[in-house]
Image (tube, rainbow over all chains, first blue to last red; front, top):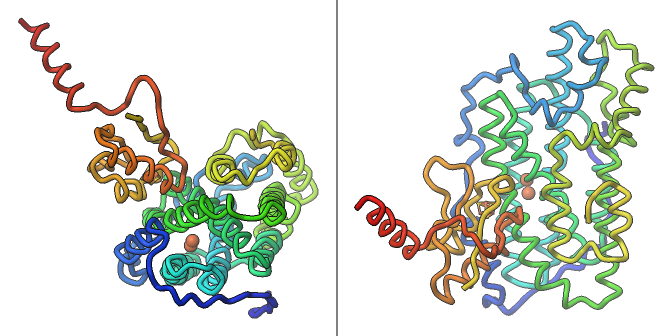
Length: 320
Length: 88
Ligand code: SF4
Ligand SMILES: [Fe+2]
Ligand SMILES: [Fe+2]
């Protein structure tokens, strides 16, 4: 993986010379954010060993545990795969945290209100802390795995979007909502107390980030001209489709190839099993789903899933 | 007056609702999820609860009709009176 990649972005930076409060809900959220800062270096019990004896990820969340080719592995290899799998999953969150850092840095520039700019500045610090905390944990667990191409495609699309409302919906509602829901599921399922503490602290920050998107867009979307609002709807659909397809194996699996190195796995049989199970709606329905439970309801709440785009969400299996 | 409740299965315990409606919504000590501890009694409290629902990042606060999960002081008084009556 190249250690540096360039993305050219058309950022329309706005100064605002009216420094008064115009959106009190956002200004209040800024006050909450200032109060709730924590320090990744000192507020996390780093002296605890990582407990790899049990499941690092929630076994319900980690579908790998239900694959026959995984169940057939000897115990030591199954544990090794579980550790790698956790490191791969957390690596995606690490890269997502960096993506959020870059995107909310842009939000400081592009949002038109001073309330929105001040709040976004606190989020920049939050995301820096998340990068720090996940990198430190993953290094102790295993190693950092490359970013999934579909996740990177969505984050690049958000960085390159020309409307600030696309950035706000794409990052604050969709990506942040997915992170918040996933951290809740992880907190409930992990047997490692260190990870539990990390995701608990991080989820509290992500909750504010989602709240910002919801509060801002609730007022903003109805004010937008129809053609622009439709572009936001289409952008949201693209982001959800890309990430849902990633989870179902169109890009996610290729970036997971390194997980299987040196393990006794018949790769051809494993690929067939993964493809069959991922195409089975019942297999998918059995597990917690942060998209279904935390992202889609907020898109509905904001009216971003319209009659025009609803059929395509239904095709992905969402009840809208 | 409108009534509200929290869907505890969605709630992540972030406490943003309590920031908006401190008199009505709380995370009880030791609990993982918020609860509507007191239904709104005034227009201000009703508005605060509505704002709490807007603030909630999980969509976990809903307006409800009919049975309420939280008690009001009147409910508590009437329950106490009924218990007294039953005991006498
Ligand atoms: S704002 Fe919503 S998610 Fe957060 S504690 Fe309140 S009800 Fe729970
Ligand atoms: Fe984050
Ligand atoms: Fe975030």
